[in-house]
Image (cartoon, rainbow, N blue to C red; front, side, top):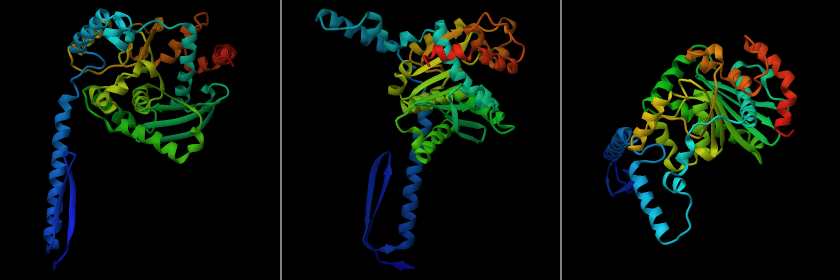
Length: 360
């Protein structure tokens, strides 16, 4: 069928609008041109996505050798002109100098233990782990991703869990997502985690109004919490968190990553394969990043706690017994219990101490 018409077609190719005007012709030609323009646009976007894969490995996590050279020159200029300046370390290395892991104080560890208890409640579906004065608001699972929201006074705790934390068999998909993240991919689970939070704020705005929002998680859940927290500019607390890879860092953006030491607190058990690699590996990673090649990494203010003596040399147990390691770091005088269930009972005797430590 042939028809006469006058219309304008506009599409976006490489973010530039292309407009075409038609006075007369057939509907078939109109639709064909529309399909061709859409195909060209899709092809262009695909090429850009492919090119971004190697590009996302360039630029380090925080600072590179060229940046240091430039910053030294700027610092020298400030010295010569007597301009106000910070210390040499801060002027030249910036926030990256604060990333060295250190041993936490007992008070800071007690604060971290509170967030670990929220994760234990999420992972084990046991409300007895929940800190006193808290209540659950949202409990949701989808394709291996667990998402829970808790309320404690004026604070909202957003907790992510993964790697078998949800439906049976989901750990295989979560393992694939973790590996894909490590090698620089962009697993969809990260965007799903962000979408879950945004959907919760739309459906239940009353839960979030005038509240301090904190994200937390362990292992892959900690990685998801780091991603969403940095995207939202919110406080994050993680335990034995899997690092975020170059692809996920690319999605977060350099400016947001620079706020990691301000927003993210990471606790790792000594010897944990996911979050606390041995010193030689950390040194190699630092050198590679300093030369301008971005690699996977745990970002934020990092603290290291010792593992349980009985777990020495067992990388799996060091990773999964992070809650116990944190508890006995805080209360070394307590006898080491064999089962996590017994540890939960032991918490009742120290609940008062934890409340006093938080000023409540």
